[in-house]
Amino acid sequence: MQHLQAFIAEFDALLARRRAAMTTPDVRATVAEIIARVRADGDAALCALTERFDGCALTPTQLRVAPAEAAPPSEPALQRAIAQASANIRFFHEQQLRPAWSALNPDGGRVGEMFRPVERAGVYVPGGTAPLISTVLMTVIPAQVAGVTHICVATPPDRNGQINPGILAACHACGITEIYRVGGAQAIAALAFGTATIPRVDVIAGPGNKYVTEAKRQVFGHVGVDLLAGPSESMIIIDNTANPAWVAADILSQAEHLDSATYIVSVPEMIMDRVEAHIYALLSERGASSALKKAVADRMVCIHVQSLDAAADVANLIAPEHLQIITEDNPRVLARLRNAGAVFLGPHAPVPLGDFVAGPSHVLPTGCAARFSSGLSTDVFRKRISVMECDAAAFARMADAIVAFGTAEQLPAHAHTATIRRA
Image (cartoon, rainbow, N blue to C red; front, top):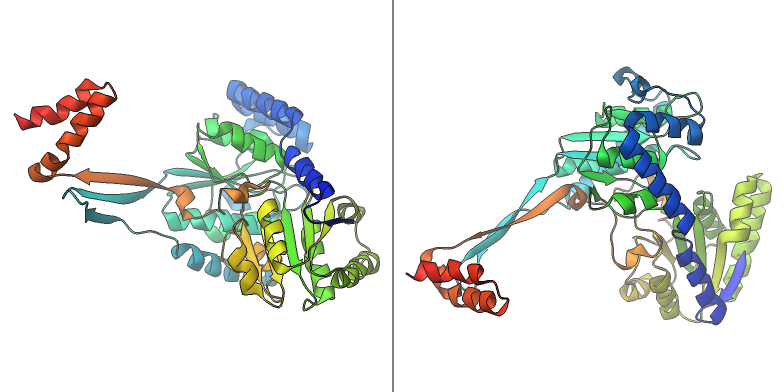
């Protein structure tokens, strides 16, 4: 684990390195080649790339999962968890729906907005190193609440061509029958441009590794994308009121994501010493994987600050995907906060609460994107359409402005639409 003081040269260098690693020339080139291949060769490219990256030989007829394969989970505990999470996710996203509105502007013209869902949405569900069963719920349910009529799921198969049964169970619970056994950048390309088997969609949503994230970046504009949700990031801000054993457990829960970045922002250093002792005890006692130990050694950073205000400033610079706050004055930190994908307040709100069951989608901006974007919402799947209407009197009050702008912008035909109505 690396220790740094905030706002010194080493701290700045760390941020620069991590931002530079968000996408690299080799990743961009690899993804561009994959997208071009799928656009040119369709299903044949998908099968070849699936064999190359997933070690699974498929024919085009096997790309779509048979509806009978999606069935309820055999474990009652998972079935109850899916039902509980689904209810909370649906409740949260129902609150996000904005109603249409209409009003008279100061000149008497009627203006407003209406909302319409996209027709087709494609959801990407990671299934390689960790089968993200909950991601099905966190992406499909917001799309359903938004009113999308056609939703498909793409997820990578294992070496035997099978989809994780938990992912299939979640699809079954959501009523999703259009499922494709394809992953990685090739899945994003197929959803964006279509193949003989996979119809193109209007919006792609869901998290993924750096190749999936880069593919979403490259297809944006051909289709809509939710956000750039790449490898996980988590930060915990703590002071001496935090339970060090709980903090250790909470940060390790996020470090176990592949390629994750984890941060503990500590006020003062004394509490961090105890947290670190618990982290290494957990790694030893629980027989942690070598991957988790490496994540702690290479990608977990403790940042020491002198005040809660400084801790919030660190969070604003890093803009973490997940931000947990366990201090004596959480409202103070929250009030100063500007950049985070999701906030978890207090000792009883670990990040897995949001990962699985609380309600907000766990598809969140990563790689500093929380500076300018938000987590997945129903807005991703709805178009906002402005509506304008005028009677003669209201138009007359705005006609001079049309003429003035049309003349100044050298667009005489624009101006003529106003002058002709004065005749």
